[in-house]
Image 1 (cartoon, rainbow, N blue to C red):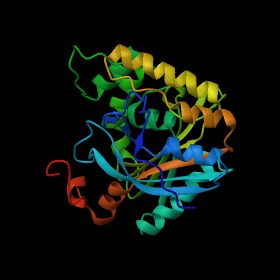
Image 2: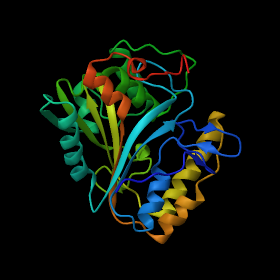
Image 3: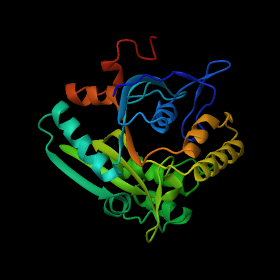
Image 4: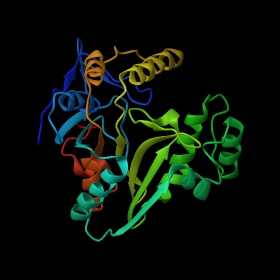
Length: 281
C-alpha cells in the first residue's frame, strides 16, 4: 500500500552521521522511517512511499541536501529476503546489470583493504590506510567506525557492483543504526547496503523491534553528539511508543531515486538529474 507521512516532525534524527534540517519548531525528516514504523505498529501491513527527504550539509557529486527516496517495508521478511526483492526492482530499472554478488562486510574489507573490520583497532586501521596511501590530517580524531568509513569510501566501496549489483551485509553492531543484532561469533547487525558501479544505492535493515534497545541506542547517539559538539535533537518518543506497543517482524529498505536515475542515464553528477540542485535552488 502506498502511504504518505509528514515531512515535518517534532523529533530529529539522533544518528551522528546525519544532520536534520531544523525548521523552527519542527525538523524536516531525513527519512520517512519513523512515521512508517508507526503505521506498521497500527497494522498497515506492507507499505511504501516515494518522498522528498532532507539532510543538512550533504552536497557533492552524489549528494544533494534535498533528494528523493523510495522506502518500503515488508512484513515477515528478513534482510536476505528483502535483498531478493531489491534485485527484482533494480533489474527492471537498470536492465543488463545481471551480475549479482552478495558479500559480508567483513569479507569485503578483507578482500579489498586487507583488514578484518571486526578485529581492527585504530592502529590497525591507520596502518591499512597508510599502506594504501590514504593521507589524513594528523590532527583529525577518528574512532574505529570513522576509520572504517574512510577506508570503505576509499578502498572498498568504489570496487563493488562493477557491471551489476553488490550487496554488502552483516555489519559491525556499532553500525546497526535501526537494525537488529544477531548473536553470532562475532555478533553482526542484520543490515545491508547495495552498490552499483561503486555507487551506494540503498540501505536496508531487518528492523529492530525492541523499544528498550532502541532507546539505549538513541541515548548513546545523544551522548556521542554532545562529545562531538553536534546539535542534540529530541528523541522520537512516538516511535518508541510504537515499538513498545509492538510492530511486526519486518525488513525495510531506503533507495536513493536520484542516484538510481544517475545510473540509468549514465550521469556523473546528481546535479544532472535534478532540475534545481542545491547550487541554484
